[in-house]
Image (cartoon, rainbow, N blue to C red; front, side, top):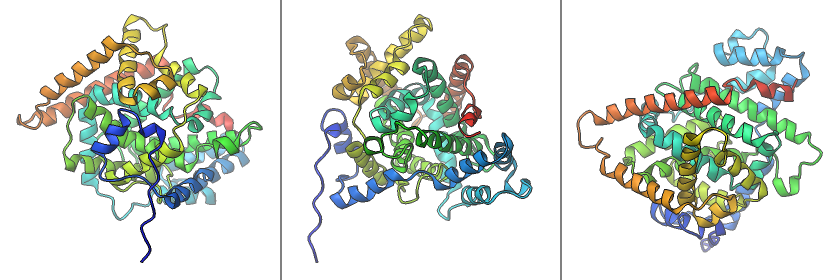
Length: 400
């Protein structure tokens, strides 16, 4: 028997507070990878989403709007509703309509209720302040985002579109076949493929330094942000989740990953897998640059929306700084506002004290309903103000 391969040292991104504490206290054991595991992971940086990429190529080869119309018919009514569907469309919908043997609808339902309960903490802090802002640390994944023009105008639209999709997905029954969460996920997947095709056509795309655009490693990293980062971000604000609830959440995002086109070899099956994925993402992807700072500024530093919005964004920046740590926050250019950071800590303490849903009968269900109402109202206002589009049709010009 050969000796066990040595583990790699922790990357710089995980050496500073608070990430070093998160990994030590929250992860299950040693999540570091070996050199061979790192190499296996890195081979997915050259792979996109073949099934969705084929659909985009199919749409581009057809008369304008015809291919998209066929895709939309299959999304809303099923592939059998499309007369003489092209083989690319058949293959795509064969994959998304296939239900894995491990899929547990009771766990999906529980995970949706957990997400509802996070309310404004989840949708207003953890999603933008940790998941999205933390995602900007991955500079290679940022490159398609900075090529879209006015970042300050696009940032709130992207945020509200992402949050709307997230609420659709995590609402009760959101992943049933024709529910808004399921159909929205298919549209997001097509949008990713449209942007990927456009980036491949760019003469200045730097494959040596940026890898393939919107590749499998980046798709898996995005999936991780919606599961691990959102849970951790809510926990930091005083919320508590049982082992059963956490297991359901990771099961939920495993299925979303399959629908989103993440390679099955990369989709985490549980929380322990997700922490290992987090380590690899930090080791290979977390290298913020000037584009990372520009994206963070577009999300956090808007000044034209009135004092209430400015105050909310300042609070969000304080939260992000606490969650990402001083070094990462400095790289992203986040403001260092000590009084607001103290306010965030105080809010978390109050939330922890008043988290009574485990001991008062009926409080869990009430918290779920109130959280769902709050987050739907919050995002409805944001989507209306930013002009977001749940169909993502503005990306059709990239392929037609």
